Image (cartoon, rainbow, N blue to C red; front, top):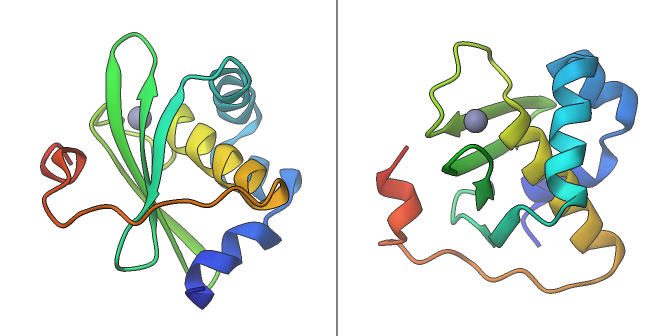
Length: 115
Ligand SMILES: [Zn+2]
């Protein structure tokens, strides 16, 4: 597996809270627990991509390189971290823990064009 992807699995709750803030992490956790993260996929650059159903459906991409998390989300939040990105990270970690295989996104994945 791509080493940069594995860095997500090292993330702890306190890392997430430090990165996104407690309120955003709680919101993201709620989206994930309610099953609002759909069609999780890996990107060729080692990031993760998913749809997140919130007030509307957002396309969200998260990358983790050298301990720095960067995100792109179609919600265009002014914050560096939105609850959708948090939800995608939590869903990804849940997949890793349960050993659920994650497909690699196609180059022409529709979500990539929404970011
Ligand atoms: Zn967002």
